[in-house]
Structures are given as structure tokens and as C-alpha cells.
Image: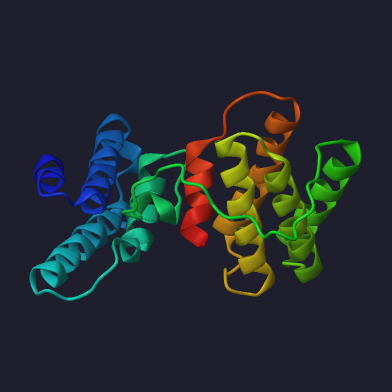
Length: 210
């Protein structure tokens, strides 16, 4: 089933079915996990997938992200380490230049900036603090303006847009938004050390929220 869905270019549907398969494989090795609740979880995922495919065949507009509740449930059953709504987002990731507002002042990495980042992100994660989100937008754009390479520049531009959306209440402050915000601190640490590489998946998650 997974192979057939991939063949007809339905990657999100294939991902849901693969997660169900992983859950069943895990239960084969750990039979104690196989209870009525687990059976219902697999069943609901199967029905959701069939409903999604039926809507596509009927020509109705439907986003694969709508499968996330069932995907989340079977991934939990499979013992997956990471689950995120963007797992089902069909966008193809590429690093593309993002314009930075001309009035943005460049900002360099440093202890004072790191302290501001830690404090602002903590406020956002704990309470959804609007001022903290605005602060992170300004910091992110400043870091983007000072970046000489494409990936850090685009990453910080996306981070700025992400926090802008959070500050305006456009991103519900659920556990996934909070985790994304927290992961930005780790990426800051890497870039501040001068180490190369931005995590593509984190950048894609930021774009998903934008």
C-alpha cells in the first residue's frame, strides 16, 4: 500500500500508512501493546486515509495536513521520536533567497544577544508573550541582515516571520509551536560558534507555520 501511494505521488498518505505499519510491527515484537485502544487507533487511521483518498478522487480540496491527528496517534503507538504537522506538508524544500526589510539593522552574535534570545524564547514558550515574540522577530531579522551565507540568512528570515506570526496570534501556541521555538535556540548556538549547517527540517517547519 505504501509503495502504491508513493507511485501515484501521494507522499503524505504513504507516510500515514507507513506509520501504521510501523505501529503494527512494534506490536508484533511487544504483544502487550496490542490492546483494544491500539486496534481502534489503527482503525481510525485507516478510515481517515480512505476518507482522504475518496475526497481526492471526488475532486474536493483537502489538505493532507488534515490527517495529522491520526498520524500523530499511530506514530505514538509506533514509538516515534519525532512527530510534527509539517511531516504531512507536501511542499518541496529548497533554499531560496528571502528579502530582508531595507530598514533592518544588522546584528552580530554575542553573549548579550544570546541572553536576549534565551529570555524572549522562554517568555514565548511559557505564556505566548507578545513582546517576547516581537523581540525575537527583531533579533532574527537583525541576524539575517548580518549573515553572509544563504542558509543562515534565509533561516533567520523565516524565524523572524515565524515569531511575527506568533506575536500576532496567527499560530496557535501548541506543543509543536513551542518545540519549534525552543529548537531555534540550539540553532543559534551552532551558528554563533561559526559552525556550518542549518537544519533543513527546522527551516522547513518554520516555513510551514508561515
